Length: 130
Length: 189
Image (cartoon, helix red, strand yellow):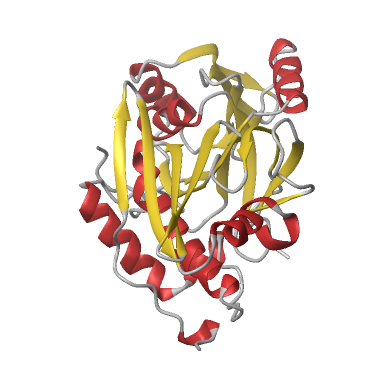
């Protein structure tokens, strides 16, 4: 048993694909459609065969309610790890993304938070070296 | 008679695309050697649909106003949409929505068989994928109607199957479409 894919709800899959590839810098991995269903995933270019992130349409009321509730609480829908949170902050900001929190030191790590424009907050985390 | 292992789809054909504003419609035509009444049952009855269609229905789709749940088959995650049959004139015209896709089927008696036409709206980049998928579904339907079923081939099952890649490339060429299943970092359109 392996953790091969994890999912995030998005309000528009085309828009999400643009943001997650062009702004965040991930690479499209699988884009398959059958009728109204679309299975869309991205992966990190640093780890092309690593865990995939499914950009899932929030096409049912429960998904929308969950997404909106945690967004309103300021909770990130997902967390990505980086070795250079300041560098990623500058790069992603230059790509046009809006950060709700610039890189901030907390216990054990430096974190930043941004809006993915698809209904989610995303946390970037750089663990402190011990 | 052929079995599933020896099935090879014929060349791409019988497909057109139409653009209306931002909306793309895929139009597929298939000649079947079976009477419209028989084809109608294959399009509307759950026990028949499950032999060939990319979804299963939890009730008959043969009456206007009928509401059924369609479950996409072959998707990596459970996907269910509720649909209402908006038009059903047996055995000639059937219309319903599959999620945000409008589906219109027309059955025309033709030389003892049926000329079956499907209109379905589809995202631009998935036109070749849709045409290849329906092509294989219609082959499976033809075998099912002829009493020599080869088993439904949809979703990942269809893609893994060798003929799918060839068909997909042929339809992509026919429509001048980019290949949607390119490798990561493929140039964007």
